[in-house]
Length: 321
Ligand SMILES: [Zn+2]
Image 1 (cartoon, rainbow, N blue to C red):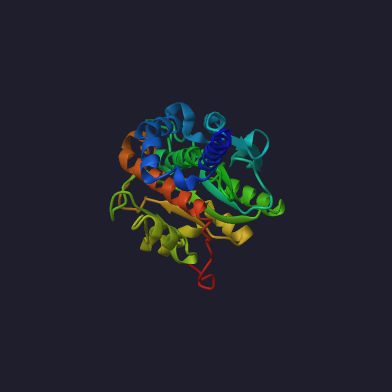
Image 2 (image 1 turned 90 degrees about the vertical axis):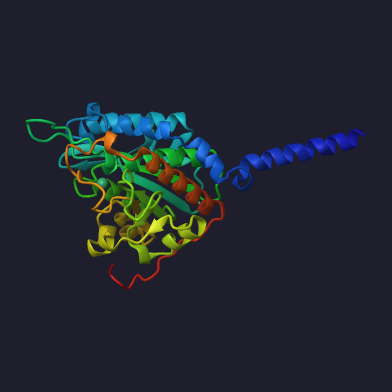
C-alpha cells in the first residue's frame, strides 16, 4: 500500500513538474486571451505616449523615463537583465543612450536564440507653438507595448530556445540602437535563429481586423509559418515591397549583420492613419481592442513557434526586395 502511495506521489510530482515546464499542456489561445488584457494594453500605451514622456527622445530626457518604465516592467514580470541593468549603451550625436535587453529564463549559450524587439524612442519635442510634443503613440509606443506584453506572457514558460526582448534606442536617428545591438550580438557569437520586430500596430489594417503585414514577405518562411499557426494573420502589403520597408526598421540590422530572418510586423498601411510623425500621433487615436487582438495573436503564434522549435529559414535571398 505504501509502495502504491509513494509511486502515486512520484507520478503526481513528475506530472506537476512536467506541466510547469512543458507549455504544450498549459497554454491555449484562451489562456492568451485571459492574460493579455485590453486594460493592460491601454495602461502601457498611455504611459509610454503620455506628454510627460516628452516624445521619448534622449536629448530632452523623455527616453530615459520611458526606459525606466520598461526596466520596472521587466523586473516585475520575471524578465531578467541580459546585460547589466538591461542596458546596451551607445552614443548617437554625442549623446549616450541605451537599448534595453531582457531575457526569459536562463540564457544557455548552447542554444539558439530568438529575439523579439521594437523601438522605444520617438522624435521628442519640436517647434514652439501649439502641441509641441510628438507623443509617438503609434510610432512606436504600440510596438513597445507589444514586446512588453508578449514578453510577459512568454516569461511564464520554459522554452527550448533562448528568448531575448529588446527595446531599441535612437531608431529615429537612423536605426542606431538596433545597429549597435546587432553588431554586439554578432561579436559575442550569439546564435540568433530569427528576429521579430513590432512597428506601429495601433491602427486596424485596411484588409481587416486582427491582421498585420510583414516586411520582406518573401525573404523567409516566417509569414507562411505564422499563417499556418494563425490563418490570415500575416498579410502581404504591396507598398511594403515598393518602399522597401524591410530596410527601414530595426529588423534590418539583424538580417545584415547576422544573415538571419529578421522581419517587422506592422499594421500601418498608409491609408489607415494620417498622423505619422505628427504631434497628433496620440494614444487616444489607437484602436485599442484591435491592437490587443494583434498582441494576443502574436503572443500565441510566437509561443507555438517556440513550443515546436520551428525553423525559420531565409529564402529568395538572391532577389533584392
Ligand atoms: Zn517607428
